[in-house]
Image (cartoon, rainbow, N blue to C red; front, side, top):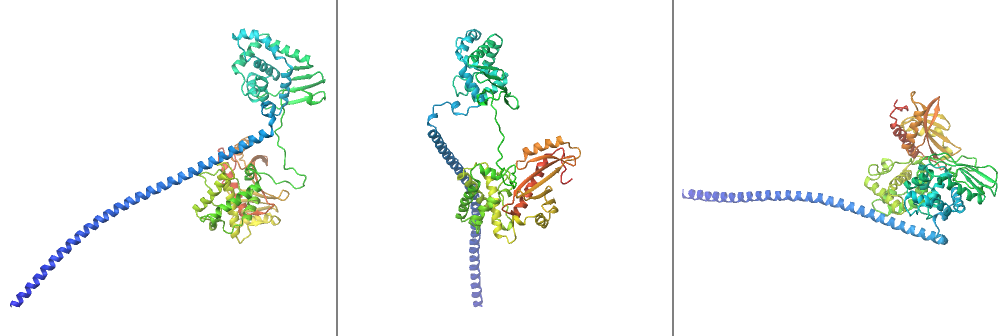
Length: 571
């Protein structure tokens, strides 16, 4: 019995001990849970702080990149300005060294003398200006109520110019401002760009015309000229010593009429005096050759014309591609873009197929340079943007192209680079040889792409569906050209004057195309053409792109036809 009690006592003690231990462990667990909750709160707080710090780091990184870009831009501009300044200094020194005797000569003596300038120079030497001033000055001082008349000699010359050239006051002002020979004649300081004020001129002319002084001045000038064997009337100059009369129709500066000079006596024209300058602004046709073949036609706007302003296009293109290739290949992030791309092929494609890149709109942030290669040949957007930037800054920094147009030039070059890259991977024929070019080949190519085509002749097809606007593709063997032609038919209510007005608007809005008005079945139509030389072959992928760009430009241009003068394709 006692043993049983002892055993129960031990069990109770053990149970109490376990309860105490359980209470202790429970307390520790609660403490741990509380600590865990506190730690989780701190972790969440730190994570939030870390997110904020990451956002700040991103903003700082973006600001850093913008600052670096601005710094690069300013350094580039400073370098361009410095180089341009050095070039100008060198040019100035070169000019000074090549013309050491012209340093102290006025501009009038360094410029080419026109016929009007020769006339005024001869009048300047033939007339006694002191006598004219002595004739006018006494009465003019009273009229002006001023003892100082420094402009009197100039005013007398201006009055004579007005008389000789039959100029009204408005035309007189324009002529004095526009003509260097006139300013040099009337000014007391040759080469000066300023003449006396217009109100003073008008007041002086009114003074002479309202008195007998005007007639007296003209009579005295004619008398002085007769003593030298000359007679000058309004528009007529007679050199009595030579017996030659030159009849002149003076050009009114307010009109666009042509100036005519007729030598009625058959005497040497170089001995006659004329009071106007005849000039021709007709450009010489440099494309005319004795060869029987027709020279390739020229488009309204081309990338070739842009390159010509910077030097020889072939050499310039070779230099650009060589430098561009080196810059892309040396960077680990971009070198794979030109993997296996032969630099000679890159250069030759740029030169041979430049016309197949349709003139692009100005590249900007809202209209960036995009990849034109098929999807399987494209690189990541970031990589391509880096490549485009490399080329753009190369054109600006190294080749001194204008910052506003260099991105557009880069887009033209990169489209041909993309073509060369694609040709490396292509197993199909992508460049047609000139000898195999025919309408059936072009028809087959577009038909396989789902276009609705019809062969008109062995050298012409029409593409009726698939593009934004129907077009004809014509092969012209005589000039080795492919001609893209579109005919925009007018609606029945449109007159030829309406269509002509629309033509002028389109030509001013669309820089890449030139529109003309013709008659088709006695109805007005708008036509436009684009020329592609195929003497070096035809890259069919680029032909497809240029046809698409050609029709897109027409469709976009016709969106300004608010009066529905032209039949739209959807109609």
